[in-house]
Length: 208
Image 1 (cartoon, helix red, strand yellow):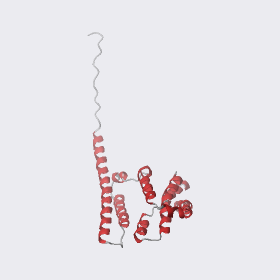
Image 2: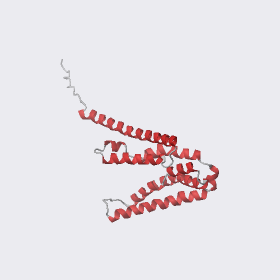
Image 3: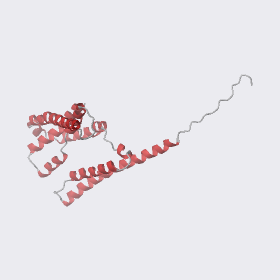
Image 4: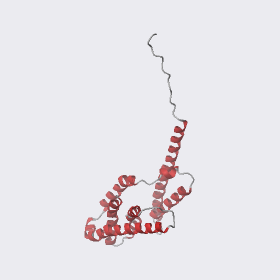
């Protein structure tokens, strides 16, 4: 028929065969990373239950959890490949937005207000001044260590101070658990507990 355009050829764009294999590999390693996290959680809960049933006081469950995490971290670091390691990489946004708020809210809920405000000046001194001194001290030491050239670290002073701010906010979970178990002086417990409650905010501000 005059004036009719010839039919255009149909071109099919088939997805590359590697896409499905990459997706399957990512799902495989994400499943393994989720399994490792769940296994550590179950191990911590079972260890805590066993130590309480057997009334073993020489070893605390937080110590077992710390060593279990160190062993798994060493295995992941020495294992070949990097897929599982990337799946378990620490993300600061996940910590700030998901993990940290429940910890702070739970700490505030369990806080004894009378002891907290009675020692408020001491707590603020340790939380603000102590955290600042710790952050600056760690940052300067890391910068001096990199300046000596013992390892191939090419970092600036600002980067070292940022690193120091992340390490300055200590959370003495093990110490507080032991204090609570052995019924130590409430003033000492309140000072350490209040300082650990406020130094997270100081560390976040210094990090930003």
